[in-house]
Length: 188
Image (tube, rainbow, N blue to C red):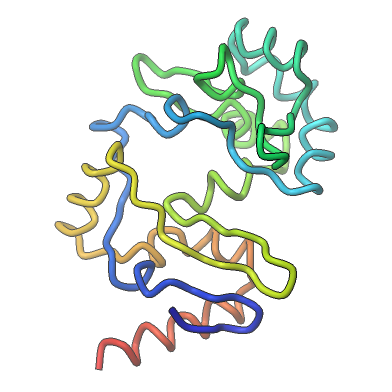
């Protein structure tokens, strides 16, 4: 672990390798698990605002879940998260054949909204935990991503480079440049 500004960062994000392999996992991270995608307060307001433009991209069961639960929910631990369909898939999930994708991101790709998707999804496999004085930035190892780890190793892409755009979105470009310096120092 090392400190970078107001973040405590796990060295795993510099040392582990990862590249999403949707052809292998079929987007399992949008379907598996026991909670929705983590959200921050600002994102809850964004989801409320953009829902009418995202709704046409969603499946009927996702729309039903959102209209029953809201565009976001509070999990059992009190954290803000996306609603789920029958306590399983994210309500915003759509499918391209058998591959799960994000309906929000599809609306973004079609130019309907300017919000790509929740930052927690964009950052994955990195998870950020907000503590009052700092943020913990950790690599989240999940067996459904074993193929992504294999592909990352094959292509020699460390986690932090795979999620570069998301890290800049979350912490800023200056923070990311500092992270790259730390990564270079660790290589020596």
